[in-house]
Length: 593
Image (cartoon, rainbow, N blue to C red; front, side, top):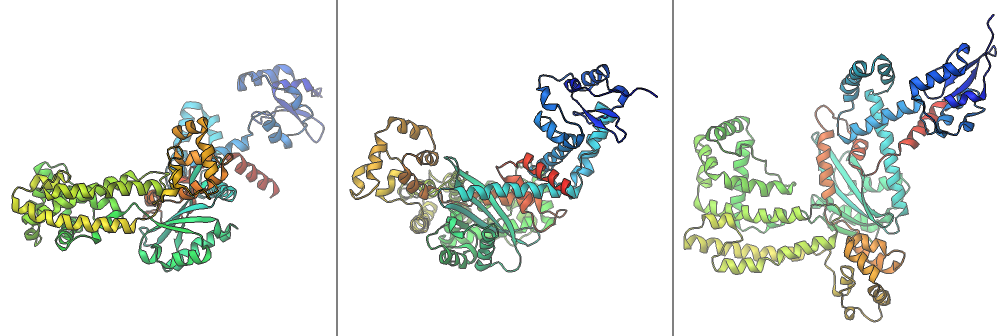
């Protein structure tokens, strides 16, 4: 009978611990790769050889911390103490990391086990060998597992956002919009803006389906239930910016009345990103008819597959760049401006195509008056697109948006003066085709009426964010004239003290306006709170528009499940899941089962 070797604490230096069999036999186990060796290998030469060959002779750690670890039951804790993950930890981490990337890239869950894992196994076999392939095979990437991982990461991200909302020193701003997906299911999406650690943060809140009817009351119930579910009072909301049908999310909708009844102090704003609808309502009859003619022409070409194919073939034959036209849509503001420009630039070619198809739209389309009206509309909506694009960014507040709108409206008097002199410099397409004095006179009169009506509507409709003189210190507390502030105003002394600080002036010159006021919370809390109450509300539903674009990736013919909130949250949230916490909870749950 061979002699049984005994464990020596000095063997710890080779990253081994001791396991004891039922009969008392001691066997060395590597804490780095879990390999268990025979009792005969319980000697320095064997352990050192494995340590150097397999693990590169890693050293430099406190060996005493590994002493008195008799069994592998506490192995994961031992490894964590050394900053080394156990095999179980690494397998879980790999699974979660892949699920995270899968959601970020908006890929279907099945891509893992159908494509990625088979490819990875083949690569591992060829490049790293069969041992690496066996380890990789243990990473769980099935459809159900990926779905489960994304759900868990989504809940962790949501929990982080909810914790931030609860900790925000001021009431939060909400951005809310509704859309219909490819299955005719209405989806309500919300983003939130709040203060965290001296900065304003914008985060995805939820995307939930409206199950039955799509009324203002339904939207309110879904919105309220979300906060109730997570035990947050609805009055944490200081403002809500909406977009969509006036009956659902308009300023006079049932949703707004329910919100104001529940939260009397709440500020309701309507998205400033869509002035095109307002402009369309102010169009004179002839200009409106011209716009509807464009819509009919587009629908004639795009709405019928044979016409669309012939249209593409026709343009390829004559060598024209634009072979695809956008559908005209009501809710996506950008399409109308682009389509008018495309129609005008392809006017002659489209006219030829309509003749070739013997369309009854030819008479109206090739009319010179229609072409003049089309040129004006293309120019006008191009200006509106530029205005909307300037407000297409994160962090856009009502004050900045209002300034951009005001700057746009202030151009109208200059345009009108030039038009009175038959100067169409501000409308280059129109200037290109107006050749006679009679044509210029007729269109100038129509433009004058329209611009005057549009100016009045803009002033009345987009009043949000218009500061009175006494509140303009928010924009620039250093150049603001304190004489506009009443002497009884309690914060006048704070303003005077703030203006005297050279360091704060340097901060103001180098920081964004919102970040500057967040930085003043500790020094001038009253001024900061007053300013941020104005700056926190959303001015547009731009983030929801981006979210709806992501929705197109998740809701397809091959991915038709109803609730995509978890996938969307992981895909577009700025927050990163707390992987270590999620994995630790997962392992604890497995041990308890």
